[in-house]
Amino acid sequence: MFIFISALFLSGCGKPFLSTLQPAGEVAQRQYQLFLLSFSVMAIVLIVVITIYVIVLIRFRRKKGDENKIPKQVAGSHKLEMIWTAIPILIILGLSIPTVYLTFYFGDVKGMERVDEQGNPEHLVVNVRANLYWWEFEYPDLGIITSQDLVVPTGEKIYFNLKASDVKHSFWIPSIGGKMDTNTENPNTFYLEFDPEKADEAGNLFYGKCAELCGSSHAYMDFKVKAISRDEFDRWVRGMQADEEPELTTDLAMQGKQLFEENDQFSCISCHATTAKDERPEAARLGPNLADFGNRTRVAGYLEYTKDNIKNWIQNPEEYKPGNLMYEEANFTDEELEALAEYLMSLKVQE
Image (tube, rainbow, N blue to C red):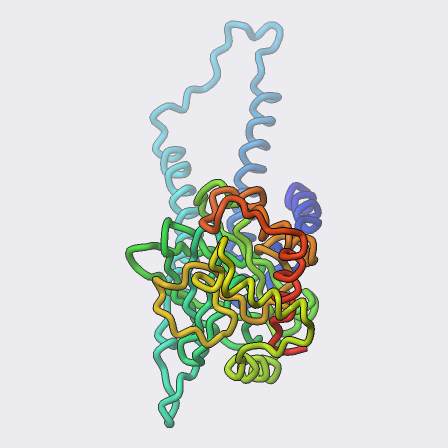
């Protein structure tokens, strides 16, 4: 009954694009099964202990007329000591064997180095770089760099190299698998797999989080994952690889581009690239890559994607993400903000 009631409550938690209780990939599914095993064992132990406690409380309570009766003493009973020593050992063994097995199973990342007969990588590899407070995703074999939006194909293993450029963060897509730290001193590697049917149920969009307390805006360090079919992913790759300077169709957008590149107040182009083919060294990529910004689903990772939010963010980023390394506050006029937002929203690889 306890397990049933707990499962009933837990089943109502979260959404398919975010919840660890609704796994959408091989890694998350196996981790979820391990969680259920651990939870069930814990519940059984709890039920047994409470049952014994209640029985003892009722059966061996002091009764009227038996005030001087001393119950049978069991101290030194080898039989009982064997029982309550063996049971915890069996429980620990029962939990540790699948845990250790899955730890080594998930830690096998040899596939990220495999190549086919033509020397092409067999699997997609993504370099993830965590920053205060944004994410960069580099596809080294495809020559593509994006930020905030991670795009992956479904139904195949995706290998990740994880690192941080400032402080320790943690890469986590709750519906797809457990978290993994991003360190400044050494990279971590692991893989995830996105289930096609579960991706459809989630609208092909999953939410990612930073799971390591990293500063004042840790809670806003979000990113989105677009999980699409292999054919759609290949089309996205071709679009990103062919992405050049966008063709601007309005005078307002052209004015925004000029401000973006030549503004006296802040030189946006010195930190942000606007195409996915960014050949600058990693240390020079100080701000998120804005390629395909017009197709983003969020502003600054977590705000609703609207022109007003883009303008508000440009003018006062500190108000929305305290401690970010952009600047505290700008002094753009309304006309300049309108032009900058128009330009950024025109950065689209695909319609």
